[in-house]
Length: 58
Image 1: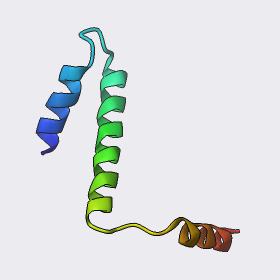
Image 2 (image 1 turned 180 degrees about the vertical axis):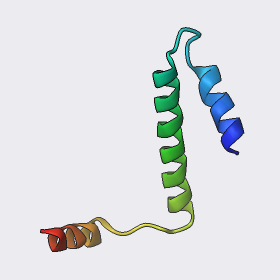
Image 3 (image 1 turned 30 degrees about the vertical axis):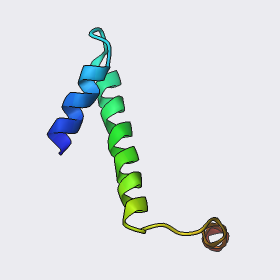
Image 4 (image 1 turned 120 degrees about the vertical axis):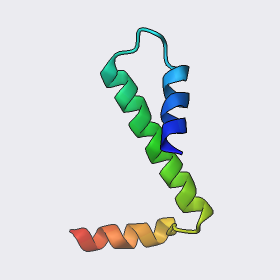
């Protein structure tokens, strides 16, 4: 899956993309995919619960 994702991301970038741009694009795509997987698997919390959790950090 990761190899396929890397190939897809690099194919979508311009030919003159720098290594940093390629790396950043790959990291963003992986983060987005992880978030979508979490949503699909029900690994989410409500906005209200998140605000309550953040309040405990202070």
